[in-house]
Length: 154
Length: 424
Image (cartoon, rainbow over all chains, first blue to last red; front, side, top):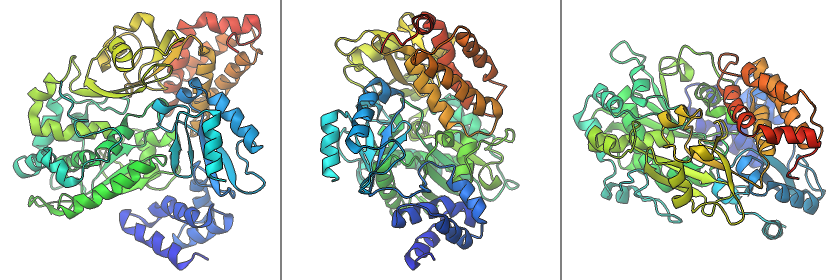
């Protein structure tokens, strides 16, 4: 069941949209903020609250790469793999992250600490290569800097 | 040299609060529009300024506004949307404006909304711009408090509500009709056109969608007039442009300069030239979905007409530099893989054609290229071109491919002949 706080936060979005279903992306982001990801059960709960079918809502959920339909780790690392970062050394960033974390893209470390995902251009091309950890952007990456960032999140 | 859009921006410092923004001349444009001009006069002024959209396509802004139904019979609800879904690879200019001077965008949106008599405005912001989201939330609240948003703005009788919508990802959302679907919380597939959004947009209502940089021009055009705006430019296309450069240059960054500044000046003077040990080979002038230009084009003016004359597009005006130590085939593979991934899957040429292109390029990179591969790529540049697809994603995707096949054909051929990537 949606918690009271989750319901309140979703309801606060209603006045911003002409129709109730317009809130659905916001609603899933709210749930994700509280629970880390959007489970099939959560899809059912939200869709009932917004008077949509679960399939309708899941159709929306699965379009957007930042609605997580699988559990993620405590920290989500989003690595830019677009053109400017690729030119500026993405391959080195990638192989360092993979070997340090011992996982592939789309996976979570055994201790549940890190999930590694690739994302398109972060709009930080002047500080390429770049990645985000949770809500924070890190640029001009090299192996030493990546080690520092990982340790800060250990 | 005047830099109206970035005059308040100080690198590494917080943006101006509303009071300081006003002291610096802010909200003079909104005041003038709402208190002394009829809505249609504002649209007419923007039309006469020849402002063209800064999001990539370059559509005349005033003309877009003039398509919105006006008068008694017009729909009661209309919308204005700032497209802040900056996701064109290599593009980071709107981030600079959003983080640097959020009040400027809000003022531009108020004037745009007044011109088309919209009552609700959205900022459609990409998820990655977390700092911009914080700053915009604060700036919108300040604007409400000061009476620039809400009911009876500046005693003009005009009402406007403004909301920030943070997206949940996907490049496709930057296409204006896909953006509207995303804003209605649907899958962000593009819509059939016509009808166009100024007539049938968000929830079926007339909707103007403008890029962030475009909207940031509006307060200055209204406050200072068309003649002044013309004087900012060095070319047929008016105003200033936020240019950017990334890649192996000494000082990657963004700069506001007269529209029509040459590529050479941008590269040499503003970006400081190539990094030591790297030689220039080519560039994408305006993001991932523009055609490559090469050495012979360095003196081309970066404006819509001039870049088009040499076979590319100004696009977003943020250039990506290809150097001699980067494989052009690898670079195009990176681009096409991106487009294949970001295709919404709605139409067959894009959904199936782009992955095919990406696979062939990957094969070339891995030394598995075969005779005939380049001809298959050539054919796709036609099959995925304008008129064959539902929206502009695939036609944009093949722009760097077709020009790379033209300018760097020998490099492509070497991948097949040598059975490996010469750069690896």
